[in-house]
Length: 382
Image 1 (cartoon, rainbow, N blue to C red):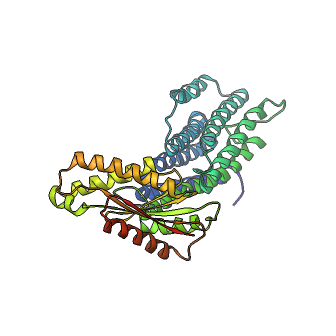
Image 2: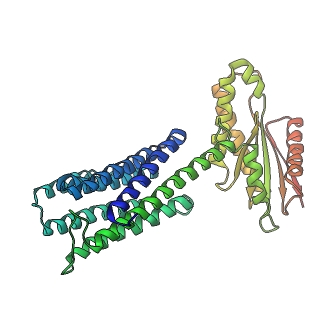
Image 3: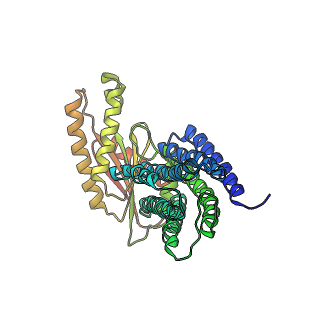
């Protein structure tokens, strides 16, 4: 089989169609709307390349003008998909793309028209690709391997088309879109195959990574409070504990809601859920930003604080107790007040293991319960 333009276009059609189908299959499980836009883009490329094959039979309007218009539309779909992926909103100015391309229909078929078609087409594709690439320049904590790869693929793809737009201006350049004549056109076809393949791989990798991250987040999070669950806590606590030193002491704080079962029995499970969510919201407001916040189960919570002291723990505990008791008293009338008991272990060296640390804090929590509830007990490990 000769490596000629029709062969390259046929290969492009096959790859684009496969990419569209694969992205639709991914969408069925991920339900990410960006996948629908990207699948539509590849489906459009499939149609556009199929129409391009007709130019060899003299169908200039369909094989050149309409086919290249679909190429612009496909990249517009890619841009909309990126916008949806990053949570942005498209500008209304992009709606002018079809209008700009429609004006070229007024041009007669000629070598000059081919150059103008190529310049305008390349500029529009290049600008759309560069805009999509710019949107994927995410912050380091948000960027992934997939988003960085897609960013660079679109950047190179857009730069290629911007350079391609300038090439027809070189004197003596041969461009005949109607029969695929000219080095620029042939190079563009090869670049198109490579770009489509890389863009498809980057898009699927990007969404798959986000889906896997979401699954991991759900597996390590408490669905009611959105805090970490025990599994998520154990994974992250090990990393934090390794950094504990005499100059950077840490504390494990356990919290239990006093008379929680009483509130549940008198006012229903909705009351219990309200108390749990209230406590989790208060910890987000009062605890230091870097604290590891966890719901271990039931009405028991654990919080790992870095670079802290007994005075800071006491201050945090007092504020939590006061604000939680105020909310609980206003929300529910119970024979015994719904309050907080807290037990903390303050340590200045990494513990032998997390289980031992939890047991020490649990003993401090038990002392707080035994000594009347609604109080904090601190155990200091020298």
